[in-house]
Image (cartoon, rainbow, N blue to C red; front, side, top):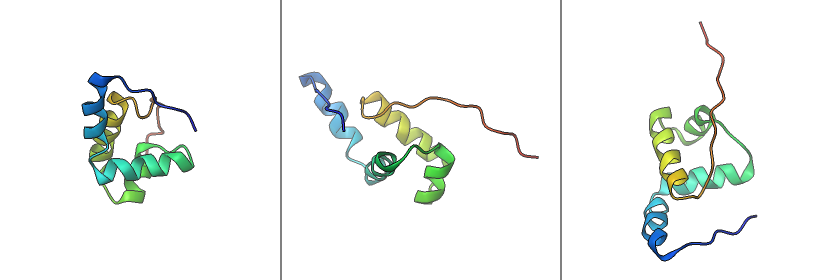
Length: 75
C-alpha cells in the first residue's frame, strides 16, 4: 500500500472525493484488483457513465490513476 501526502489546500478536494459511498466502493474494488469501468459498473450496478465520472473525481483528488485502453467493438 502506498502513502498519500496531502497539502492543506488539497484536503477539501480529497474530503469531497471520499464523501461518496460509490467512490469508496470503487476504491475498495480497485484495491483488490485492476478493473475497467465496464466491470466496475457491472459489479456496483451503476451506469458506465456514472462510474467514469466517479473515477474522474477520484483521479483529480489524487486517489487513483487511470489509463485508457481501447476495447473491442462488438457487433
